Length: 196
Image (cartoon, rainbow, N blue to C red; front, side, top):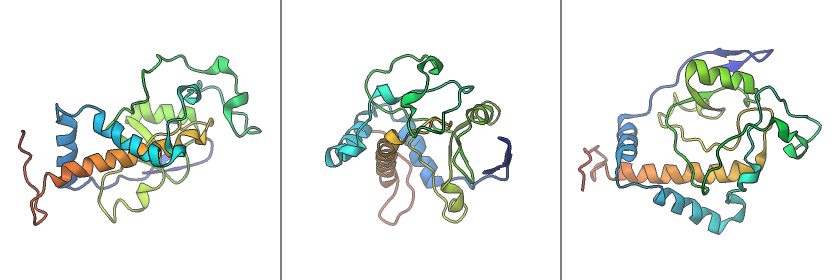
């Protein structure tokens, strides 16, 4: 947890409680399942997109990472006028299958729009992404934060991927819940996962 101060300075103000053991066990079982390709997750995302077109992947042409030294021109609402000379070259991904990353999610009091600070926290604290909502409830209701990533936490905020990211996070939550269900008996008691 942290709060943004002036001049791109962030202050770490605490840590959230870890998720319950049942959730961590299900997550561990999900991550270590050798029979789990991306297929179930991709199928769940496609089911959402089939019902609502706006939840589909927006296309790789809009997935642009700009140099952390290049700030967005705030007179424009999209990056259509941003210089392509500042786009970071990256290997083209095949398909639109999301990648799952597990690690530290920083929760703060405002949207992260500072690429330099993002890079610093990533480097120094191993932060994978930033969000605002979880800090308000995590110490009240222990759970696992699942985030769909829709931007690069920089000044080039683009809303095109928000709904796809939400569908991806919801699909992963559905998949994780299926592993929790398999880890409980009829009384809700956690059971050890048995392969096979």
